[in-house]
Length: 204
Image 1 (cartoon, rainbow, N blue to C red):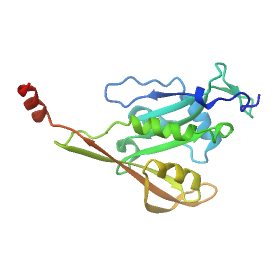
Image 2 (image 1 turned 60 degrees about the horizontal axis):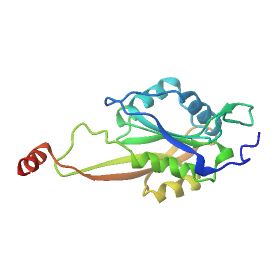
Image 3 (image 1 turned 30 degrees about the horizontal axis):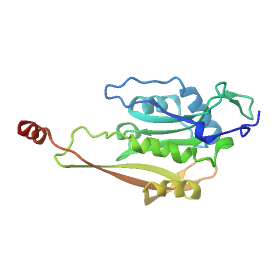
C-alpha cells in the first residue's frame, strides 16, 4: 500500500500518549510503535531502561494515521502511529534542564507539517518540572541536541524560538561521527505565590 494514497494531513490525530509522573496515569499503549519508528528512522536509539525513564518522567505526543487499520510500510508492517516527540525531565536526562530526547516522523509522511504540529503540541502543553514556584515570574529552559548537518530540523526548531547556545564535539558517535548543536528555548510564565492568591481572595 502506498502511504501517500488519499493521505490528508488535516485528518491526522495528535494526542498525548503519557504524562508526567506528578499524579497522572501513564498510558503506554503505543510505546511499541514509538520504539519501531525510533529504530527505523533514527540512528540514535535508546535501550528499554532509558525509554522506561522517559515514559515515567516525561511527556510524549504522537501523530496517528487517519486510516483506522493503519498503513503498510516498506517492511510490510502495519502501524497507525506515524510520528512522535518525547521530552523528559532533567532528573532522567541528566542534563542541566528538561530536554527533548527523541523526535521522528516516518519518512513516508514527512513534508506534511506533521513534525511542526508535534513540536507545537508539546510546547503548548509543556509542564514545568520545578519543585517550587517563585512568587512572580517563572522561567525555565527546554533544550535539545541536533546534528550540525541537520539543517531542516534546525530551521524547524528556530521557528519556535530555539537558539543554538553551544556545540558539543563528536556528540554523535554512530555513523557518521558528528558534532551536535545544543539548542534552547526559555519559557516565561507569570505566577502568583499562595500568599498573594490568599490576599486577592480576601479582597473579593
